[in-house]
Image (cartoon, rainbow, N blue to C red; front, side, top):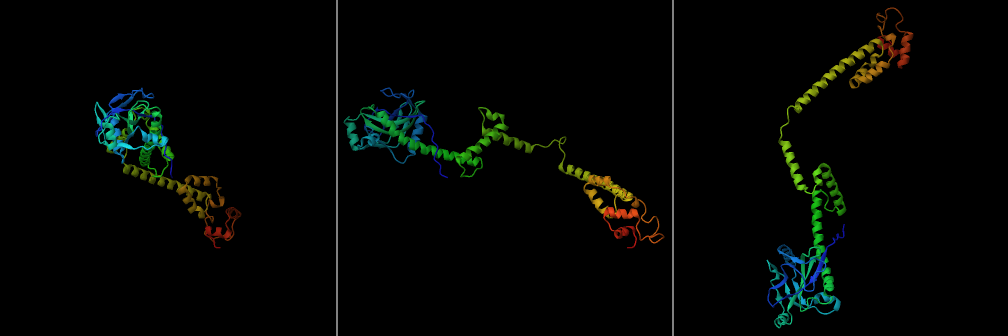
Length: 367
């Protein structure tokens, strides 16, 4: 999705001042150190200031441009939009050089024939650079152009220069900020493993989660001197040390030994459980709480859940007719009417939902 780049407030001022010149290829644009204009400027900063570090940044800015900067007449290139007059160039330059203790120079100035003649005739004596500066410190930030002038403090010049220079500076600065912001967001997306199309809001939200995790797990993260790379390096060192360390035999048991113990314990439990199930089923069959057809079911239930089997047997009522021998110690057919069931046996059939014929099979009686 297309998003408008964020803007950032900048405490930047713009100024034009003048220095004496000659028609040579080298022109001093700014003096070294702290300086002020003869008319008392700057009024919104303690002074103007430039050193080798600030100068190098300006040199790099100009080196990154394709087009050279212009030297015009009386800042007409800044006034043209207002007065409608032409703004011919007096010279062009693109290379800057810092000279310690002296100042910032344009060292490849190409004067037009007209400008050279005017300078030789002393019709123009000064050059006035247009530059931006930090309103808090007075540090020079950029050079925009320069002009031939004999009056470096023209009436209303500050306002016009600031308006024209601000338009250009805002565009170039915004492009630089947008480029740097996009690069920063791409790096954060990579760090947080986010999609390349993740929005700024999504990146900020995920970054806040990471910040919360780091703070919650690391009290030192709240200190001024906290460093994420240092924290990650320390964690990596801890991981390497833990991997290399041998476990204390007094505190840890080998996995194979632990598994063998667990298997043996499980086998013993199964054996004990089997004996108990066998004892319960045998007793229940003997006293009539279980019928022979229920034996397999009872043993399976006990193998899975002996508590459930115990619960069933605790509530089952013994059948007196089944607590002794099924034929009273006589073989089927020996005396008595073995084809008829007793009243108690019939009661069992009714209670269990078993037909008399099926019940007779369990007694060994013919159907």
